[in-house]
Image 1: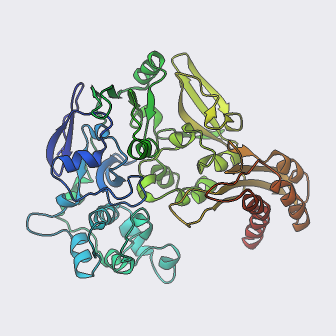
Image 2: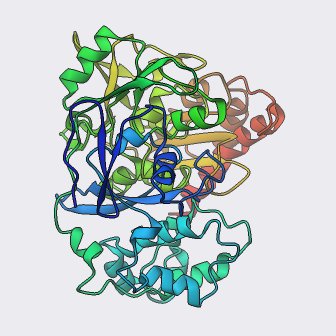
Image 3: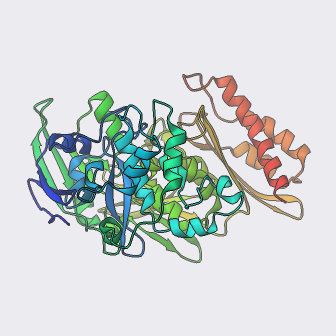
Length: 494
């Protein structure tokens, strides 16, 4: 059932078809709220969105106007962000006395050992169980293609569990349970719910003292972009929150509190994908999972980047505008977007302006975005370069922070490089373009000799430093080898 939208004072949140009231404090995350009302299956493990013990399912709007059950980390999301929304926890999956098929398979195949992580796994598995495209993927999963795509014979994408950690190393029986699942039965009420629209975004205003500091705190979700810009013009110090995958960590780990939070993740003006003859425009509040699904490979470089970005749980909440808004030098989207010559649309009550991403970053977590401005869209110019790659160097293959990230977009005509764009992350105080390397490549023959020479130039780009992720020497070595790797990839693909 949908909970009614609220205008002031409290949030109404439907959890397992029962409406609960939440009235703050505003920094309270969804996990603490759920446990506070007696739903203790979801647990805090890492408090950083890396273990998935806190995973829940939320009804989110799909591109076709129906509902998509989406798994997210409840430890990062403000509880107020669920105002008017529908949530299912592990406790709400069973139908009366009958356990859910996901719960049944996890039990009979030994997928639960200590049990701490199990409810989170079950919520992530259930979201994938109800994924509308899974039946089509099952039909296409023949021969070795299923293994190549980490997709089981039933169409279950095992990467849907990439954000869930089992400390008992019980991954094989968990995978066995996932691959044993059939399709939802006709009478499945959760499956039927997908056919109706998801709840609309509620207009929320919760203002209450923070219990930890005694200082007042406020959470607001305006209903329109104009209203959000008015608030930001009056209170430029307000913290802009979208998926909260970055801010939630600050709250949990560092005890950060905001006097005023402005939620923009569901603003319709900041969502969607728009195409013109000159560019593809991505709504800043579109999540990375939504972009991956709706672009469907039409921007190949982003198609290579997004699966390497954190985990599915994080991508289900994190927005592309949010990743740029932090100004982090190790964000994964800037190197790829720099290679794509992306532009940002910055909007305030004074109007909108378009800024090249290459001119956006000015210092460590500093940008040209002025007080009162929001990133409302990202524009990718057309046509796209035919040769692209995204290389992420990290200690883990998935769900990790980059030591170095490189985005490539290169055009070659008649054996000559006509255009080269290379975006770098993790090698300076800001993401940057490899200008010297680009200049060397353009006009040169696309040969191994050219690449060897340009690789030495690339190794000198940026000002890498030593930190706990990698040494400066290692980062330099990765830059040098990355261009040669890119060349080898392109030649092998011919």
